Length: 248
Image 1 (spheres, rainbow, N blue to C red):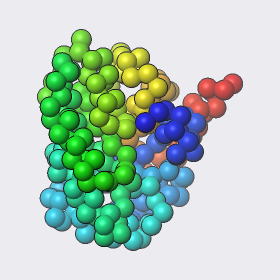
Image 2 (image 1 turned 180 degrees about the vertical axis):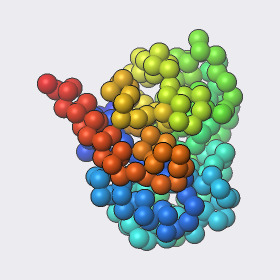
Image 3 (image 1 turned 30 degrees about the horizontal axis):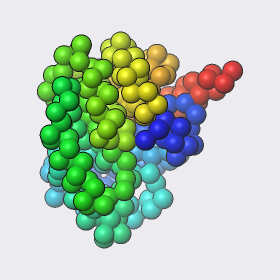
Image 4 (image 1 turned 135 degrees about the vertical axis):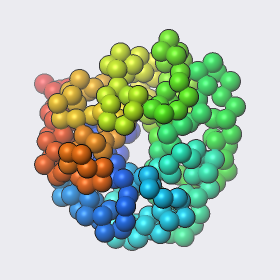
């Protein structure tokens, strides 16, 4: 996917802010989505840190019924597209289309072999699922990729996903800016997302990214589950200012 198409899809000039909700239950998810919609964010991710996929799916279905037009994406914790894409296809066949999938590990081989990434890509194509694939590359808590190979990993990643997605070393930790600059320069006009450590205070530093997937930076302090709508509002404002700045 090209950057221009991504920004047109979300009708955002600056970085697209997609809040991440760490799911506890349906009431908690709906309360957080109400904040997201109220502040004008264009969509969100749901992730199942506390339970398995079988318990997660009923919540996803209820959210889709409650918010039929919301841009909605999911992360099945610790699962690659091998598991995710058939499930997403099955949900679609039930009338529950999910707009995106974020996999922490897209199985990118920085040396170019990419056997697993090719298998995942084939499964995705075979299922016919049409959503956006955010693929973790040099991503937190996955196999460590040497820094000198970041550019190679990023370049190969563009062949297998819609949104090249990277992070800092852990949840809530900002990415090294040199890493983000390397990714940006090596993926050209492909889409780049950052999935850790973004806050109101540092967002402008990462303005070369196209998407911020953010939880810790917009949650209440020391709260893993609840979005602070004031923090979200401030981050959205900063990202709009970044967008305006591109043309001023």
